[in-house]
Image (tube, rainbow, N blue to C red; front, side, top):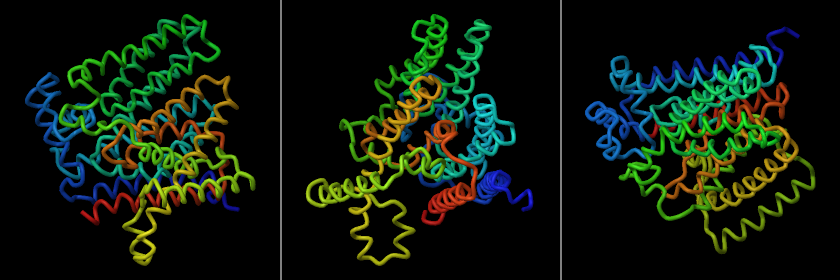
Length: 420
């Protein structure tokens, strides 16, 4: 067999090709701002007028995420002119930087060579939601990048904790600063603060570990809490409705169901498969379907536009009622498997930190009551890339799943440009 046909080489080639294709596609998309893109640009001019002030923060309009978007796009306005495709390429470029940071983390943590680590980091291109948030000028990618950078810096700080404490604490401070920026980009990244408590496993009486984590969390909170105080909440005043009304069980369920999809594409070995498990899943689906038809009436129709073009209208009428309980069953299965994996590796603090951060980030969907978007799940993608390493093998099956994820991502991205 020719060397380039080996699964690892093909996977690397496919990953690089996908990223380059996304860059070229983003350059090709010269349509004016659409979907949510037009909502964020006026706030860049607001930032230009008021700077980082109370006036700016309380007058942010039609933008639930924090001001990181403006911090990024304001200094780049001379290059992008705040027009397409320039403003979209900012996210595509940051995705590339995120892949490089993931490569560094994988190289260090898993003792992989750079080539293999780069191939594994490119696995983020198999997460369908990443294509949408990277190919459009939306708000997810900047905080995702800084959260990933924060994790890399925190890992280096932990490594230096015993041998070079001053360097460890300084690196921890930088990690906290990066996390603070991520939280100012999208408040769900606040969950990395409580998740950091998992790093105390087997280190609860380690004063150096406590000091490092206090600095890490303290710096992050010191950056975002004053903004939340001015807002009287986690969002600008005009967008407070996004979290009003308590909790949404449906949105939380969908968050974990989409997390399961990411996991299946990246590493199905995370799940426990057996005939008994499949029978339990089938039984759970039947119960949930009956409950949905008779009482709950949840409706959710993923990819309904694309599927509606090939399926008859009669099928599309029941499709939302069929899919909602199926996703609920998958979400429950995913949560159970994740809990069991956590228990299996309960003595590994960094793994538990990544697991807690990923699961808490998905759980923030319970609090988003106004709507659900797969973009919210995309925020956890870099965490899943790191978390799932070791639960899959480099095979032609992985290549097939990677291509499927990329095709779904491409179709999802193009839907925005073709139907707006």
